[in-house]
Amino acid sequence: MENNQTKEKLLAEIERLKKELKKKKKYGLVWEDKPEDVVEMCKEKLPVLKEVKGKEIITDKNKPVNLLIEGDNYHALSVLNYTHAGKIDVIYIDPPYNTGNKDFVFNDHYIDKEDGYRHSMWLSFMEKRLKLAKNLLKNDGVIFISIDDNEVAQLKLLMDNSDLFGEDNTEIMIWQKTDFTDGVLKITKRFRTEHEYIIVCYKNKTLAEFNKVLQYSQIKNEYGNPDNDQRGPWISTELGRSMEKSRKDSPKYYAISSPNKKKSYRQWLFTKEEMDTLIKDGRVYFGKNGDAVPRLKKFVNEKRYKAATSIIRDFGSARVAMEELDEIFGGRVFNYPKPTELIIYLLNLLKEKDIMVLDFFVGSGTTGEAVLELNKEDGGNRKFILCTNNELNGLEKELREKGMKESEIQERGICRQVCYPRIEKVINGYKNSKGEKVEGLGGNLKYYKTEFVDYKNPNDKNKIKLTKEAVEMLCVKEETFELVQDSGDFKIFKNHEHYTGIIFDQLVIKDFKKAIRDIKSKFSVYVFSLGDDSFDEEFEDIKQKVRLSPIPEAILKVYRRIFK
Image (cartoon, rainbow, N blue to C red; front, top):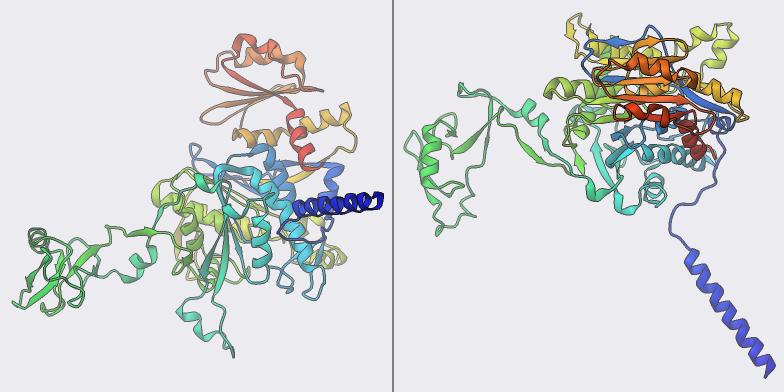
């Protein structure tokens, strides 16, 4: 009897354990996480931003200021988690595809195609950055990620993970990267790969809503004016159903007579009265000889829109992207850029024209140019933040061995040699490869570099140091870049809308309040505190005017969460 009871208890325990195991089973992607040097260093050093002097571009002080951040994108994203959490509308990135052809660097080493941990290293690299990126998106924000077959399966499963975006918030687009002129470039025994993918991830899909898309390529390539219509270029579109599909019992079935008296019977799209008005107005085309089946004119100023689809065709190609970059620089400076037309297409999906755009795998700077072009076209006030690590394609060691100075080596990196010059040229104008002057698009840019504050021990000395080094971070957070006053113990900055005050010593609060007494504007005020005291009592008399925050504690809270 006792043995039976013991056996029953054992079986019951086995069943209980089976149920527990089932609860813990999860479908998803498993990989071996790989430590990364740039991540580990943040346990002892905290990233901040420092402006690179002499690279500021300002064409209109009343326009938004765009940002270019030079540094590893993990560090840049960490800073942005303090300055821009929940502020970004759309992220576009074109990360390394991990082809094994020297396109992916992990811990300062190119990852070879034969490396058994190739996918694990790439996934570790991407997950750390995508988690930080998700924190930056607004609740209705979206991220677009360009990728190809090497990592698309892994990336889709990674984004499906509930710790990132989840299956319900992840979709895939296909971009046709070739055009008809590319057909002769490569012959294969099987089939040519003419596409790449764009993984689309929503912070909350239920809140996201895309615009219908303007058919740019059709406007540029298809519109003509064979009858010299004074209203300008047009294309012809169907005016009714074919004879086979027309219903003769429909009230819209009737005959239209051409100028040559040729009758065409159809079930038309318009009533007889509406059709007579269109013909009288010259909006119906009967062909070159005046006797063709009538078609409706669609003029170029009547822009055509359609719902965005999962397949993107006729919006730039790999060839066009190379050519437009070659035109700017007069020769080859970068391989495999993305075309501006593709990025414009994606940005046009968003309904607002004052959005914040982030690209933290910036490459040649296509995203920045696309934002500037779109603003010029529709009068928008979109802003961009571009992040790049200024890589030298593995040449650093070779250049150092040749005795080149570190400052000279840095000037050869992609950020300083390609991305920044491209943005500067499209803002101010340039001469193309034919020597023709190309008008600048206008815009403003601030150039920053990630630097570090030693913070192995969170003592008072290091807190003071972090506060002093974080001034430019606070200006970026508040978008107040113009220095108004620097007393030594406090600083005041402004933009065309509001002010920022930074107080390094609580003993000068009275002097600070006196300095801002006659300024009739809202203030964001940061007060140094060894703890998290924001000094509300000292500002009680002007509490309607100021928003208070303790530093560096507000920054440290973010960094503790990220670097835990």
